[in-house]
Image (cartoon, rainbow, N blue to C red; front, side, top):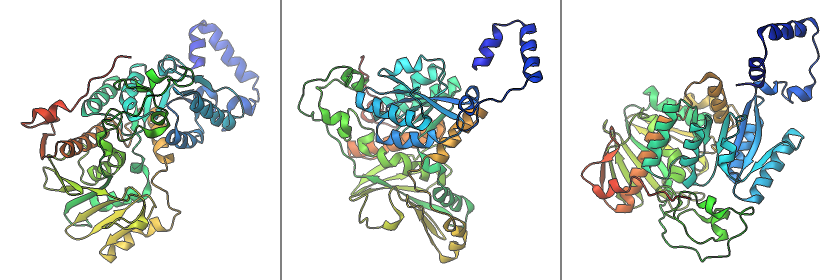
Length: 435
């Protein structure tokens, strides 16, 4: 509800009409500072709160601050240094000191003046914070991986659909032109019948050790209990809160496979028109996991030894997060540089329009964020809506579990359960710590 609507409810109908007539009879010039830099009245803006502000969130937030109809009003982080850096960024953008700082995300979600949240914590917090936000009536943009487990992804999607909140997974490559064009080629039939999809991923990593314990900082400096959140307790170590949590089973999604897989498998799902399903079988092999869909298409999760350097089998100039779609009559490969390679050469005509424009890098969130904010207004479905996220993320988790268990797994896509494998089914969820 807007401020004007709230005020109107407290007036009589006669007073509201009188006020409206007065506004017509005596028009006023509204100062730009009241309307905001963009000329959009504050009451018409989408108010945004941020939960968890590290390097990736800062990148996302800069794109969101540039949106003319969005106003960031609050930053929440368990680390004082990150909170203050976030406020400095926001206040500098608006030329004021209005951005509110909070340590506990529950305080941010309790604010009635916030319409939507950007969630960019570590993996362990994405699903719980997103679910809490939806239950508090907020729309959610969540960085990926959106759920630490299969059960997290299921509960998150179910909650978003039940509460009818707008949700956008941070798999922004769905909104980047070169990836969109590659998918269009796959859908057009110009590659022939699709038979193999390649998704680049990191080499999986699984650590269960603990870093040495260090003195726990004051809660205002680092709220260690809240940083851990649903993850099992362990002693504080500064390396965790500085980004060194990656690769540890307690904190990471799918043995790091979802780091890139949340993007690349998602794009392969899209190319295969499989957003409402997932592969049936997952089999680990040397430097890859091979999955198979019910329609016969093969998905290869290719482990890259050097994701940012020489990568045999891939066009290195296409950048990070490459994907390749192969059909009976041709193939297309693309990556974060914005370029595309195709075969046969006749397909180069199809990509001329893209090469005529400045490339958009795969990390760019601008169009994806715009899609999110537009859907908040229309109440429509986003490019990476809860069901898209659910199926691509569960496919990644299933592939990771096949690697962890070192055996072939078969899943029932309709019920999202592994067939005849109690151990794998037991790993679809993890106990959550009470904090």
